[in-house]
Amino acid sequence: MILKMMDNASARPLDIVVFGATGLSGAYVVAELLERTIQSGAVCAEDADRRIGIAGRSRDKLTALQTKLGADDTSCPILVADVQDAAALAAVARQAKLIVSCAGPYRHYGEPVVAACIEAGTDYIDISGEPEYIEMIEAKYHEKAKERGVLVVSACGWDSIPAELGSLRTARRFKPPAVCTQIEEFVTIHGGAAGIAAHYATYCSAVEGIGATGELKKLRASQPKKPRPAIPGPPLKRQISPYWEKRLDAYAVPFMGADASIVRRAVQTFADHPRGLSDKGTQGIPPFHFAAYLTIPDRWSLWRYVALGTAFVQLAAREWGRRLLLEYPRFFTWGLFTKAAPTEEQTKETSFEMTFYGAGYDAPPPPGSNQPPNKCVGVRICGPDPADNSTSIIASQAALCLISARPRLAKGGVHTAGSVFGFTDLEERLGKAGVVFEDIS
Image (tube, rainbow, N blue to C red):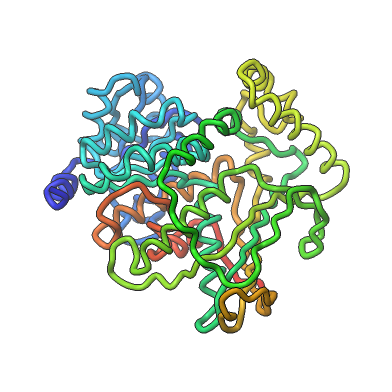
């Protein structure tokens, strides 16, 4: 059945369809894909002439996007479907090898697209950052996706793919017999004179994600318990309060994104599949502890973050509070999130860095040893603004990489991006497209 489904997918008229194409993130992803699938803009030669389509619920908006990007029905055909119309979604899914879903919040709009893709034998990726949604999809659809030979990979945008690939690069710097046992990630956002702004859809996902914390706990409690991978040495001390991070000359606070959840799932996958998801070799990634932090440059910014963050978490946990947060994003984020799109100047001036510090041993310590790590390495990832350019670069290259590497990847199932793409050329692709990885120590 799996081979038949994959053969059918290979004969489809389109390689990639972006669903939710007329949203802010979707439009950027479409523009990036169109640029990277012509000869002059392709990162890899095999990407040229890939067939891209756009999908959403409004034909008028899709036509307007098509016109804005200088495309037509030949270079970028339109497909119309609403998430509430299962038949229309299925028809869209059957036209492509891969669906890139940009329609969030995903806990409201994601599942019907996943279900349609699995039924159609179409691979699926999205740019979700909602742990409850991501883990629900894995719990509900992993076996069915595996049976039908469909890859489902959530969190294929900023910041989760950099978190996974950055962690893998850090761990790989420990050459056997050396072993990495701890990785800390630090996210830094740089802005210019126009300030930093981010998408309202991202804000909505954060509100919904925190609001679903209780559901996430119930979901995790309902799943079969897996033994935790054995990690040599003492556990990583995770900071729960703001502190001064002298290595970066900045304050650090726990990062509220999905990185920790995503990376820990990837670590579990590496432990469960020592020969890789495709069973074609040894992955060579031992398990490690992981923590993620956001850096803050000064005390005033730290005070503001703590005050707003505390109010945000308390309100997001209540239905009336979520309504309030969604109605007044500018007020509750000090202008970081608004219902308007970031300005061109803000987008141009904003960039990000993600710094990874790995700690471990020159050789594995004896079982039960509390010997502190004696080897440290560092990795840094830099790229343009996370909201628009980096997300579109990462999602587009993940999609193109999946199409190119598909015969060498897992046959199917719901997986993290790191466990799927960690042994492909995605890191190299991202570097050529503007999201650069480097070793720093």
